[in-house]
Length: 117
Length: 132
Image: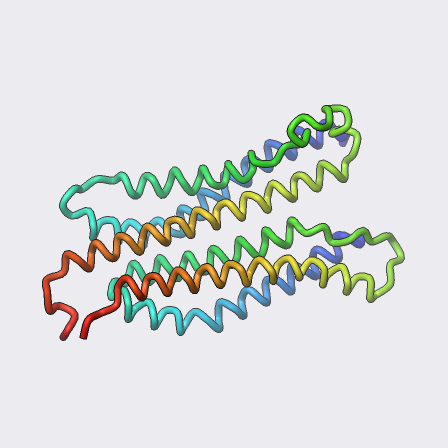
């Protein structure tokens, strides 16, 4: 297996774990909030699916697009680690941008649909 | 496999994958979006919104694929493109990345549309409905 393939597979495993963790951490709170502010189950489902779709696509797209360094055969362990870290930097950068945009969107949703008591 | 054959195969395969990603994104969002659109469109009964979702998601996938230029908008010629296999692989990766990004932009656009639909739906509710 080439060094590039090893780095790509290692990065893929880390990215899938990170995406699953983010989804698992945020989904219950997001579902509760959406159910409360929209009051429409399909709308809650739409935003939850959009959330999962967006973080998955952004994470995987950043992973595929990152160069994974230029490792040669016989590279040392830490060179692999640096190559994986370089790929993950793009993933995290794009993921945080998307999360901020999503938060802004949910804030607009809350402001638009706020209930008058 | 020669570089030229690789270019042909990877180009059409990349196009199909991009189109498939757009269709997959549409299928993920279709059911909940249709329910929202139906709730809003009780008066008009127009399938326009649902069709627009299908068209825009698949177009976003294809647009991401098409937005990459092998010749860098004419800066390098065909022979230079075909000469370097690593360049071809890199462009394939960028095509997939661009496809993912464009689908994300489209999903965010539709999230905004759903906000507007929900506001319309809320404005139709009779006064005092929320105070229960």
